[in-house]
Image (cartoon, rainbow, N blue to C red; front, side, top):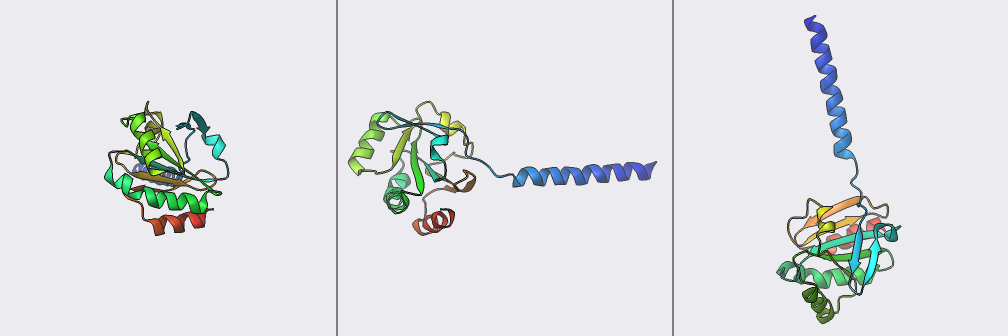
Length: 162
């Protein structure tokens, strides 16, 4: 009787490990999103098919975010036919400040307002700015960068994904 219990516990243990590994290794997909792009444009996840997606969560009062904008501009200019780079302003950022920043700095890529925080809610790992999320063309998340991006590393990653 004891031997049967041991075998049953062993089987349960092995099954739980297998299930755990399955869920750990399940790729994380880009969720369905609706972006409110500056200029009264709406953009949906389905509009980004067959493109590498780069979401950069930032704020106008974040020094590191501002510092990395020229590198993001370079990435955008280099890969604009293969990627969709969207800078998502944090919910606390006033739209007027975001618009002013985009105009003053001539940002060429899309900037989305997330005034209601719905986009941010879909990404529970975004706690600090800047945070950059990169997907492949199938919208499987490949990398999450917390803090300032490194241009060379991001360039290499995108080159491999496109």
